Length: 172
Image (cartoon, rainbow, N blue to C red; front, side, top):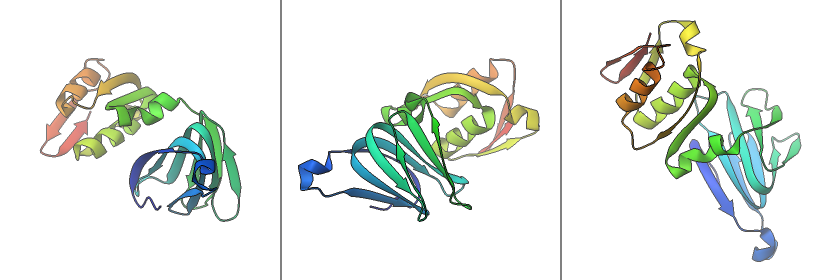
């Protein structure tokens, strides 16, 4: 299978249940061999990396010259340019909450949060100040909320104000 763009969650039965057949996902410069598991791959074209988060089971992440085993609760991040793979421990709930209809942000920058919201609500985001991009927030929002409702919650922290101009959100 090939994931050309976007994000996908996989729940794959063990290869032993399919005569040893392996399930393989190809993304930009990365190959993920699945051995029966649950995992998430994020491969948006505008991101400088492709990330694979293992929920349970086992996967092997390869970039053509090296391969790394992922353990549950860990995420590989492959740099699109250098193809270097790094592995770190992550909060799995935050990484896969989208599939349950939630946005979950734990200690995330406003820049990261707005990137997620921009994809979901199909808007552009402009920041007036670099310091505003770097503000960090914690929160869980249902995807059924309107963009304005989520922005109002963020604004109620008194750390940032926003303005909507057509399909552009201006963070002040």
